[in-house]
Image 1: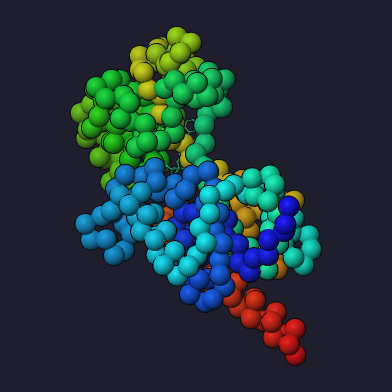
Image 2 (image 1 turned 90 degrees about the vertical axis):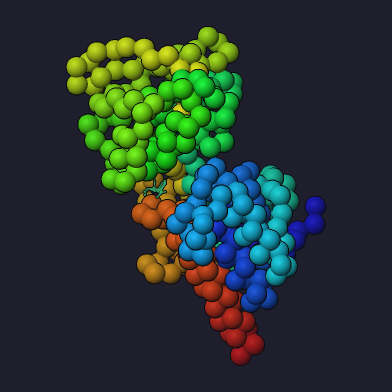
Length: 318
Ligand code: NDP
């Protein structure tokens, strides 16, 4: 198969990737952007975005991502469907393989692969997740299926609160399992959950097993980690909202990362330890993880890539 040459390859289609694309395209870098398996990224699983500047009335996550894609395409970003399966950053030219076959040689690579939802890792949880039978990490995507039913949500961060509140509007009852005796979420988000009538919060409570009938979820066996009392909660939907893992495994052999897999960037820049490879968005950010910070670092990555190319071209022509 013919090897394609690309000046600027962007991996990932969240706010970081599309912002990098807008800047790279306007700087004549002819960016090619691979969308990955979740075009639009994590925001496509968010309902209302109220904190992105410029949307005084809020905007839905999917709508915002459509607009970002359109803006990137307006400046001729080549947005493609495809999944980057392998990279080789050992040489001068950075090699990237798409869908396990197509090989691309890139002058610059911008990584904006984001992060993915974490699960508890229980066998029963994975079983019903794979069966599509009632385990989900996205209330906004799947909550609809549990209208007027009882659901469980695990987690105590802002995501869990947001999702619990979303579910409470659809479901008869939502039971929230909080493993400590307090929330991690911001006060306002936690208060909203506490003040919602059909959300029951169980503190110091962990999941022992997701219960099911072989086809779908029927509830969860939980334990109070203080009293050691075990009991069952009936539910048809089991939602997990316990944080995220950066999607950076394929870059591990080449890029410096922290123990969780967040790519290390030069502080205040989008540079990685490999020249010509840049990172932006949640793939490198375990602190802020916001759409607006992702977009900001996407801009930085494109500007850093442009400067890198300009410096390289000057060296060649001198
Ligand atoms: P967080 O890491 O903030 O919270 C994860 C939660 O899951 C914690 O309460 C943690 O418990 C719990 N948890 C982790 N592992 C387990 C486990 N094995 N069993 C049970 N519970 C577990 O992740 P979020 O996804 O909630 O938020 C990520 C970032 O995004 C945060 O900075 C947040 O502020 C931001 N965010 C902002 C929103 C907004 O402002 N609208 C909406 C959503 C997210 P423990 O507390 O005990 O560690």
